Amino acid sequence: MAIRKILTIPDPILRKKSLTVDKVDKEIKSLMDDMLNTMYEAPGIGLAAIQIGIPKRIVVMDLSKDTEKKNPMFFVNPEITWMSDLKSTYEEGCLSIPNQFAKIDRPEKCNFKFLDYDGNPKELKAEGLLSTCIQHEIDHLNGVLFIDHLSKLKKDIIIKKVSKEKKEAERVVV
Ligand code: GNR
Ligand code: NI
Image (spheres, rainbow, N blue to C red):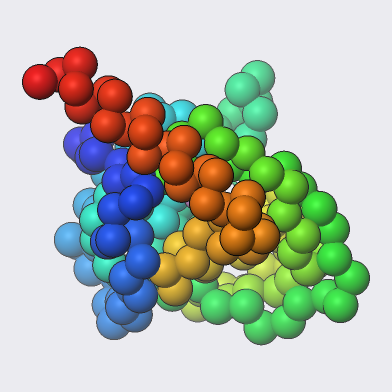
């Protein structure tokens, strides 16, 4: 299992649309293992494959609290099958947009289908953090970031801040 580098904005790869996985084979499982390791190390509660530069429709997640037993979840080709009209607001962050947080409105509840780690089709009803997080991750698979849900002004401020911090960090290395 390896830890991979997480891409950050304004990397254009994050805007790519990810491709459907046709079979959950050994390589896909190995990729999911790397993604989980990378997510735990970051640390984050979710990660889409495109965040490590791989345009495949794969998401890993673990919403367990620090004090609880780990609960890794794997979602291949996740697809929303229903969403509530009612919205809820959650303060979101993203490993690809370091140190930036914003309140985002999304459907409060949703149902989604996916293939699990063994390639078996499953469906889940989601609310709370799971609902927010799966919608955030499916956005990634479509090249969408949480800042796209903000006003242009707020979005531009965040892009500018992160780009500046990135450049300053690069300068230290060089
Ligand atoms: O670690 C993460 N935390 C988080 C908090 C609120 C809403 C969504 C998330 S997902 C994020 C990890 C990430 O960037 N996944 O794509
Ligand atoms: Ni994210």
